[in-house]
Image 1 (cartoon, rainbow, N blue to C red):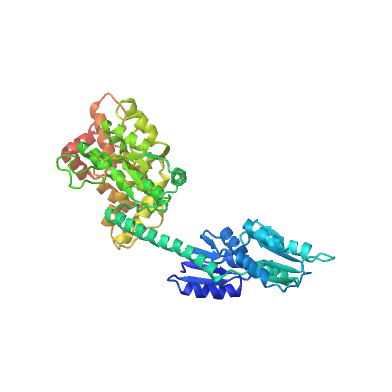
Image 2 (cartoon, helix red, strand yellow; image 1 turned 90 degrees about the horizontal axis):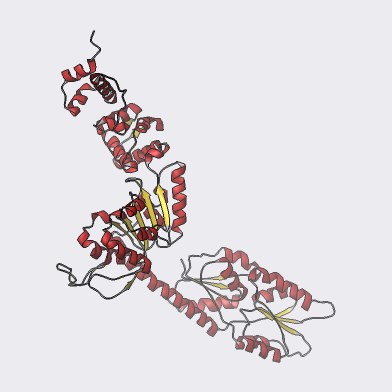
Length: 533
């Protein structure tokens, strides 16, 4: 991939560009661009180059159709006078300079040119329209009936159009000195990018070494339900913003997955993603962990001090999971950081500017905690500039089957086991459970299913069997509750309880007795009460 692309509108400049660029330590490509086909050529150039060098209408085109920086070759008054001097000294020939303003734009040039008795016509519009404009002016001015301009002086495009109509033309050339000036400017950009890339590489290495990386993107979020689609669409919108995000949802709904996806689709994607579990930090260390400390700030402080997690997240994202567990006495300091975007290490008087996006997650009702005095209401409003709610799996049962299929397909691949199933109906037994641990719990179960299953076909019976083995308290399948009719006889009610329990254990009396600590004769008596005849 060339670092520099040189777009040359005429052969003489092409030759000069090769000569100048070969003397520089830079990868380059010189493309000669026929003026009347310039638009087609420029649209096809490699936009991975770091800089483009050109002039006149071709430079205008490059600016219009690419995002690459464009360095224009300057045209000096000497270049213009050199073109005029190449015209044979015939007084009665009427001469005009037709040019875009980026060729001849200096007022001193214009006054000098007009002092020579040469008319001057410029166009400041985008090149996309200037070819037609120059064509029209040549037809109306130079080819007008009764006489007009005899000689056209201008850039490569003006000369090409003049030649098409049989008119004399003189090209305003760019000297080698002007070309060197443009190349110098282009190489400054290349060198700046090179240094910037080196700094970026060093920073990226530090990020990788410390594990400050977001591994997941929106493509990793599974689910077909409208609620998931709605959450993803909203999160993608949040990625384009830089506001604080509060993600709410039960444990296991994928809050960190969404946080990482937002980071990876934001402008901060090349920066660190620092994940902090607020409930896992000892209260006495909370401030020093988040904001850092100076050497000797407290007993046991590391010599030389230590950066805090907020400082580590500079130019990236900090994810504060379980934000509700932040000690109440430190919430005011956290609020101050969010408001001022500045931090101060423990034991230091120096203020450090902070450029980190804040994403928080909670499985609790922060407003409810605020009403109880356990969470600052002003901090809640600062954290929740943008809010995202992730519904529990029990509210999107349509996703259970598709998630189970995806998880099993991945897990079978990891352990290199050939597991087949006819369709998603094989996982139907999983629909009877509320999955209080949400997606995380479902995934854990699928890991067991893949591990326990022999190679071959997975059926609804085999899924149900692994489920029963995995959940010994079988009543959890129904949320841990049994419903029986109230009667005047407690022993009949007890018989109903054990009858329903037995059905949940699929008739396995031995397991029911073992897990509930009763003997088989006791179970038989409880099930038989009122039925002996």
